[in-house]
Length: 96
Image 1 (tube, rainbow, N blue to C red):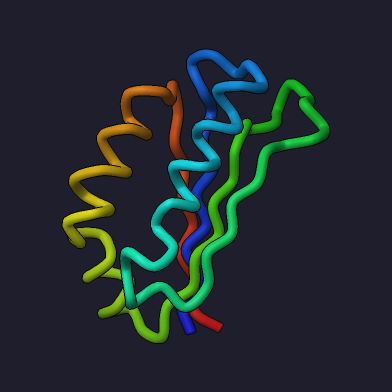
Image 2 (tube, helix red, strand yellow; image 1 turned 45 degrees about the vertical axis):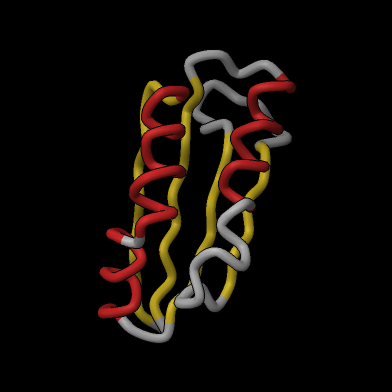
């Protein structure tokens, strides 16, 4: 199992924008069959070091994660949206 964690810092961290970003991430459900788990949440602490939105996805293999990266819905819909609303994006991928 491979877990893909991504944290997003938004240009405009208003409640409305954070929820729209979360909804865009969750829109991948049912669009990308390789996703074994999809979770997205908005930060509730709101500290100086916090990011605004988190994404947690899980895949059966590293090959599935790599296929997800170039999947037309992810690459054509989600990534362009995220790049347009974020000032910073960081990720960690690990096997368990």
